[in-house]
Image (cartoon, rainbow, N blue to C red; front, top):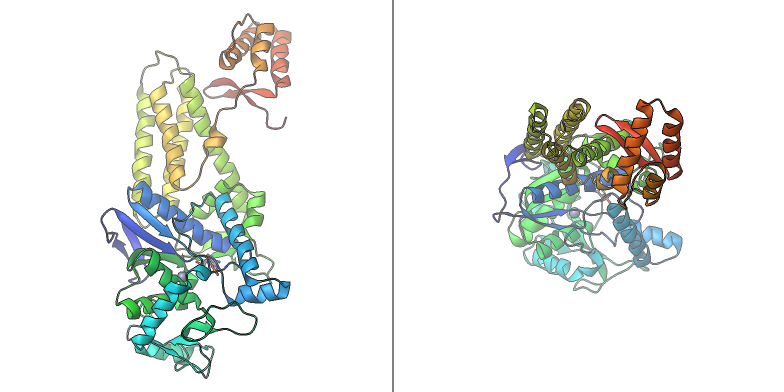
Length: 494
Ligand code: AMP
Ligand code: ZN
C-alpha cells in the first residue's frame, strides 16, 4: 500500500515500524469554541485512514490530544468571566459529542495538555541540558532553532530565507525570531503550573511532541493534521524530538487539504463560516461523510450545500438498493437457480471489493473507492430490474453485504436506513378480516394481503382491491411496486 509522505513529497510503500502494528497521532483541536467543518474534514480524513488500516488487518493505536490551555482559551474565558478550565471542559465535551455524531471513532488515548505537564517538563529539561533550549530573562523557555542543524527539513524551509521573507513576531527575549516558546511564564490571572523555570504553562508545539513520546513512543508510523500545521507546528514538533531524543518524531507525515466554502476560504467576515454542529443539526452524518470523501484527502475540498443536498439522495439510493436486495433475497423462490444474472452480480460484488482495496491502497483514494461502491449499486439495480421472479438468495445477499461492508470501512453506516420496516401486529388481524388468513406472522399476513390485492385487481374487482389498500394504509403502510415485486413499507409521510 502506498502513502504520500509530506516530508519526502512522494508516495512511499507503507511498512510499519513493528510488523502488523500502526501507531498514529493526529493533532486535536484547541478547545475554545465549537469546531468548524474545515476541522471536521481533517478529523474525518484520519478517521477513514485509521478505519482502513484496521480493515487491512493492522493493529492500530491512535492517539489524539485536546489542547485545553492556550491564549485563545484564556482570552475567551476572561471575556466571559469564567475560568479557562471551565471553558475548555465545555468545548472538549462539545467536540467529543460532535465527533460521535459524525461517526468518528474515539481515539485509543485522548490526553489533555493540562494533565500531562510532567512529560512536557521532562522534555524541556532535556532540551535545556543539551543546549537546544534556553531560559530567557522573562522566564519563558525557548527552543533555539539555530541549535538544530536540520530545522526546516520537514516543511522544506530554509531559515535564512525565512528570516528574510517572513514577518515574525520579534521579541527581545528570543535569540532568533524563529525560536519558539516551550514554556510560557505565567502572567497574572493565567492558569499556571510550577516548574524549575518559574510558574507557567506549556507551549502548543511542546504538548503534542511530549504526548507522542509518552503515549506512543518515538518515532511513530503516521503523524497527521491539516496542511496548515506543517509549518510551524509540525516543523517545531519534529525539531524537539530530534534534539531531545535523537529520533524522528514520525516516519510518515500526512496532511489533509483545506476545506473551502463555495470556492472561498471559510471566514466569519465572509459569512461562509459553518460549525460542524450546525451542519449536523440539518444533515445526516452519512451525507456529510459521503460529500467529504468524494474529494481526495490531499486536495482542497469545495464544500457547497447544494452538493450536500445531492449526497442525502445518494445515501438514500444506496440504502434502498441494499434494502431491495435483502428483500429480494428473502422472497426468492426456494428452488430459484443460480443463473447468468446471478453470476454477473456475484462477479460485480467481487470486482467492487477488489477495486475498493486497490483505490484505498493508492494513498487512500476514497473517491475511487466510492466509485467502486456506486458501480456495484448500479449493477445490483440492473439485476433487480431485470431479475423478475428468478431471483436467488446467494448473489443478492453477497451484493448487499458488500455494499454495506465497504461503506462501513468509510464510516458510513446505512444499516438503519436499509433495515426492513417492522410490520405492525395489526396486519395479522387485517389479513384475517379481509382474506382467509389464519396465523400470527406479520410477514405471512403481508404476503396474504398483497396476494389477495393482486388477485382482486386481476379479477377487476376494484372495490376489493381498494378496500385492501385502504386497510393497509390505516396501519401506516403503503404498497410499493418495486422491480423485485410488490411489498409493504412504512409510509414516511404518515
Ligand atoms: P486547530 O484547532 O485550529 O488546531 O485545528 C484543528 C485541525 O483542523 C488541524 O489539524 C487543522 O489543520 C485543521 N484545519 C483547520 N482549518 C481547516 C480547514 N479549513 N480545512 C481542513 N482542515 C482544517
Ligand atoms: Zn500537534
